[in-house]
Image 1 (cartoon, each protein chain N blue to C red):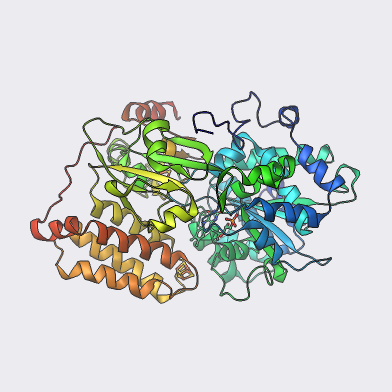
Image 2: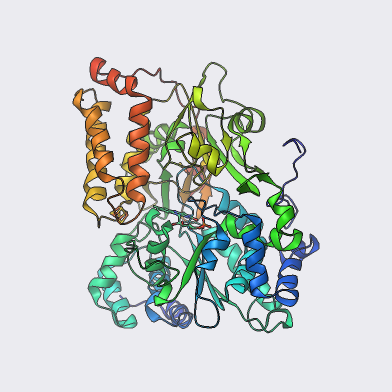
Length: 155
Length: 431
Ligand SMILES: Cc1cc2nc3c(=O)[nH]c(=O)nc-3n(C[C@H](O)[C@H](O)[C@H](O)COP(=O)(O)O)c2cc1C
Ligand code: SF4
Ligand code: FES
């Protein structure tokens, strides 16, 4: 797949920021994922050609970093923190509630493509545990009621 | 000075309206220290001030910042300063607060630090999930550049300094400085073998110093107020203000600023509002982020500084203070952390890669009531084999807590073996 013209322009300027082209790799992957929601195998080859890297190097980087996805997420990608502070402040109940309500397991996407759910490690927001990130945004100090209200507000 | 009278120095701006803007920052006296540094001081003088202040790194190890900068070669020649804004140590959320609420403080500190070490292109490596702080920093850099506070000949001084912000993409290990450099070069974040140390061979093969956000946020203060004033804050060899992150079973979790060396109990019971539930007494405290040994309730009369906590057998680490009340099962808590490290191990050293997986397996069977008595010593033995035998300190960061939890709470682990259930009386989590 070929990124849109707009994304390609952003990719060009990201590459210009670095004297060493390879340093732009993470930024380029972020841009592609922002456009399509995930990084396909074809994207990896396109990036490899654009940055003059072996495709295997690009694939290695994509698989190393947890933020890079190789499958389409839901429109609302719910990442719920499962690390110690969030655990002792109740994230297990929240995950159970989400799995039941959305009818999917950790790692799944709802059939209508509206939500995806994944548990992740500490997001650096333990002072407001339990918390989750939906797309770019942090939602903190969650309760079951607040979680329900948030889900309802997501179209 | 009692801590009741303490006025925040690092967090002094965060409650100002519009605190992220350049104009608000300048109104509160911001960028005066940068101006003084580049116009009235030589880089060597700034470096000497930082050395004399006693500032120790806030990223985890507490290494003296001035000494670290001193390892970089003097004089001209490309070298880099890299700001470590990867903040991913469980229990830690102070750098995010600084970047979100006072980005110009972080930037001013970074620019002065670049001047001190002779770096003309600084990199800020920010954790990928921090989308808001990233946007806020980007805007701050633009504002600073437009006001001639960054870029060519800063404030007409002849000192050039470009700043590039680089986003990570989700990997705890990229907070380790050599993994961070690999990641900045567009690679998988695999820690490098040392030596050579980054001060000799760092980013793009050039001498490099990696410093934590909070560390760097102290630098304007040192330049503005002077090193002897700064060294008067805190305790001998543990100087300056400190951000403490309180989380877990306390009424008022959050980031608190006090001098280094505040009593742990004062932090918990006076400032963080005490324990969450009256019926649930304190069980233990993890004082420095998930990678440090645990303090049981009866060992919590300690001062929160590098040397006092080391004397107590643990570490200040990132000052992520996780408070556990008696509803917590220690086996369950340790299993949570073991899974975290197993997930985050980069996999290049056998002891770390395999050891983390074994910890998880053993703790899972203890948790399920299928454990054996020999499992306790097996956990300790594993820690002995991992610690000190890996490329980067992540191995130690999991081996140390495992050893301490099993040693301190041995009866609880044994109870899981003997009774196939937990000694702790769980309480429904307060959601
Ligand atoms: C596994 C691991 C993760 C780390 N994560 C961070 C981090 O997120 N932020 C940070 O500043 N330092 C982190 N460090 C410490 C850095 O390697 C480095 O020591 C620190 O950034 C130096 O800054 P300082 O001298 O200002 O403390 C980590 C270390 C290890 C071993
Ligand atoms: S100790 Fe673990 S994280 Fe560090 S280099 Fe070895 S395998 Fe990677
Ligand atoms: S443990 Fe959940 S944000 Fe840190």
